[in-house]
Amino acid sequence: MKAHSLLKGLVGAAFLLGAAVSAHAADTLAAGTLKVGTETAFAPFDYIDAGEHTGLNVDLFAEIGKELGVKIEWVALPWDGVFPALEAGKFDVVAGPATITKKRMERYRFTPPIAEATIAILKKAGDTTISKPEDIAGKTIGVGKATAQLDQLKEFSATLPTKVDVREYPAFTESYADLAAGRIAGVANSLPNIAFVASQRKGTFEVVLPPFGKKSYFGFIGLKDADHAPLMDAIDAAMLKIKADGRMAELQKKWFGASFDTPDAVKDPAF
Image 1: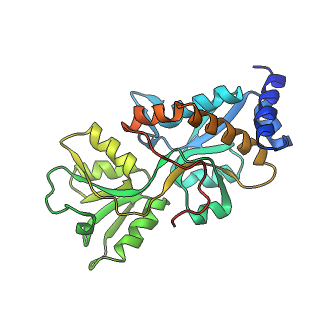
Image 2 (image 1 turned 180 degrees about the horizontal axis):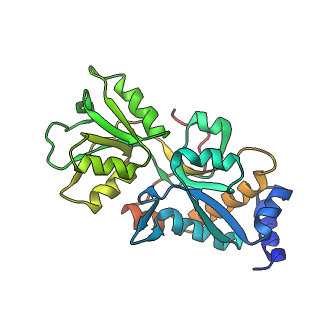
């Protein structure tokens, strides 16, 4: 697609939100490519299936690309390297997604939420020692390194009579493998993620309900500065259009089995 048509699309999206097109935004989309960083071990958002990158994020960014008139270029890396790489300019936005928190909002800009992110426990099927979240007291629970789920698990652990033995993993897929092998008693992750994992491996895993974390949401992440604002404005406008016409709900149903009632923006996260 030619540069002038790309810029026309960006100008239109930015105009809807009253933004000017910065040099960064123009340079980013003039070549016809939006670079998106992500971790490909966070099903059902981003993961590898039969050698192919798939998930809700892949489908959703395909729609965003259509709205902006650009090709999506994926950059995969471990989650604990995603934010430093974003700040180093390795890509334009993070798919992730990431839980929207007060601390992260101080440093980064979030898109409209794409799903609920409230945290819960995944256990091995048939484990009668865990029937409610409080039963993880004193047990070894896996969680992703450098994640909001880690912070919430530690906070919840502090309320229990015996603290949880928290085991951090570079990727959640490794924690699921250890859970299946009986090396840990559970995995703390967002409900959509573990519900998907349990549905894919019936007889191996079960979800412990209710979720124990505070109500939270997932969003995509960009840099929080004036130079990047027009680009993020354009992405936000595209996402809100996708939400309004029902495409977002269709993708949620495809990947989670249900759609989520999410706000257009999160201004005051629960934590």
